[in-house]
Amino acid sequence: MSTTHLLIRKDQLATARLHTDTTERPLADGQVRVRIDSFALTSNNITYAAFGDAMSYWQFFPSEEEGWGSIPVWGFASVVQSLHPGVAVGERLYGYWPMATSAVLSPDRLSPARFTDAAPHRAELPAVYNQYFRCNADPLYTTDTEDLQALLRPLFITSWLIDDFMADNDFFGATTMLLSSASSKTAYGTAFQLHQREGIEVVGLTSPANVAFCQSLGCYDRVVTYDALDSIAADTPCVYIDFAGNGELRTAIHERFANLKYSSSIGGTHVEQLASKGAGKSLAGPRATLFFAPAQIKKRTTEWGADEFGRRMVAAWHQFLSKVTDTNNPWLHAEHHHGGEAVQAAYAQVLAGKGDPRTGHILSLFKTPGGR
Image (cartoon, rainbow, N blue to C red; front, side, top):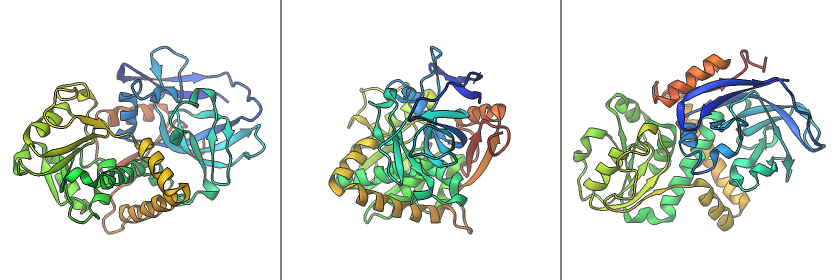
């Protein structure tokens, strides 16, 4: 079967094109071929691209074309060909995929719940991204919530880890958490967790257009527009959790809050400003430090054990999902995009940071559901 990819210019993220490889390469012993049925596209994936070279995200699914890359995405795939005795044709998998119609994996370290892709080019990359979950034994999987899993699962795990990291460090002595890009999924997942902490005020920073949405979530103690930072006392002992990557905003926060205890950079919803003023080392106060989720996963699995880590994460996920899907006030609905042109248009929309924060984009490079 031919494989279609959406390729992105690494140095110019707004430039994207479809590429179809009509030559199907035969599988080696131990490999499987999967059909990538659907995947989510969020600002988190734009962060992968923005930090693609610095943090090796382009290396997961390398393109054979110089200067072009495939952005990793989270979603679901079905095994269509297998030369591995432990993986059956028809098996459904959740994991990390290229923006493509198919992929080849080399399953290793199999258990009933998951396996690892042992492809040589992924050996030195963070292990958390190389795991594939077998849906028939995955405690987070339900058939009717695939869209929400693709949209929220990787983001919520990051949110849960940010909250745990802050608590693990006694919130760096702060009582107020300032979250930029408060309408983004990773931000409000983090706010959902932090809101349950005693003695911590959660302040959402957002644009005027998203104030009502952020307030409706009920997980922010206060919602403040970016141009109203002076409504927060300058001597507030606070931590800045930066989901926006907006250099000017980061500078303004560092300069205003003399009692800024810690500055954590999570991602970039404002990609064009990642390298602008305030992104460097000349900031007032603490140095902005990039949060790397795999490091906190490694720390906690060592301290708690993998089983306990999984139990806590699953419990938090189900609690969050019940809130997101509350019929009286659902936080999110999925919008589906099928076919190459629709996927390109959705990518351009997400890259530009446009759209309703209640809308999540589920993409497939196939023109119709079911991989046709």
